[in-house]
Image (cartoon, rainbow, N blue to C red; front, side, top):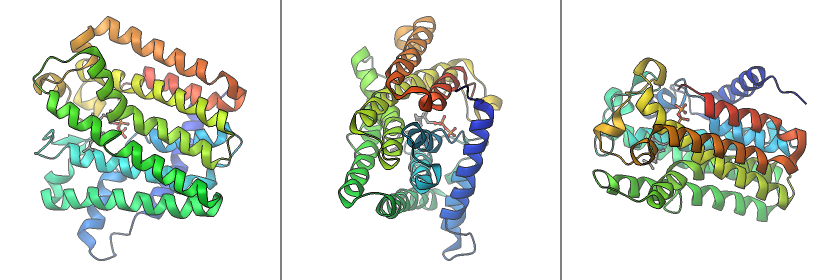
Length: 297
Ligand code: GRG
């Protein structure tokens, strides 16, 4: 099967965007301001990588996109919450995200914090209800727990804490991998895994997809580090050079640009190798892996 990646991404992206519009509370519903803030950040132009990975994970094991769409949205809501909170003055203090002013710049800090909280809680409501529609009760619990683990102190929040604590310090290569694997790769890995689980994948398929997701997630963050050095505001939709300004440990700062690029390429090859047992149905994930390596934003 050859995948026209552009058509695949556009189609799945349109599906996800329509679903996001459906699952987010309307701006007309009270309290209107929080709903406005939630929609402002989520519906801003992002790549939708994590929700598309949920869909691609389901399709790779013979599942259907429409059976996992709310879970796909949930992963995007968790991602959007992390971006809103990460941009706050108490954390990265950024003015631009996805080519727009950040949430706290538009709505104020209190509403930005609450919009993040509301997106995180809405995400778990969506996962619980959808999983209950398509899977057995034990699977519902397992899926909710997996996403919670990937988003919490064993995953994204844990990575963010160590990242913040490491600012201005020289850290080891192992510690940098810990940060990247937790802060970024955990959510990318779980997106693929829950897609495969809810898509009805066999345990060994879910395992293979999860391992591929870990490699893909690490590659994604290495490329993000590289783009922070080589990109610009127009392409990235956020200010480049922020890692250096904040004295963050990154792949380029620790390993240099050429070695960072080589490592990202290696990890994308590893992602594809790990997907071999899934056969042609995993072609969209392989194409997404190439996209992660070649992306400019
Ligand atoms: C728990 C507050 C909190 C933060 C968790 C995700 C995160 C850590 C911080 C956001 C900032 C950052 C650089 C995170 C690394 C992950 C990453 C590269 C996010 C940007 O994701 P993209 O490129 O963004 O997929 P779009 O806008 O395309 O969805």
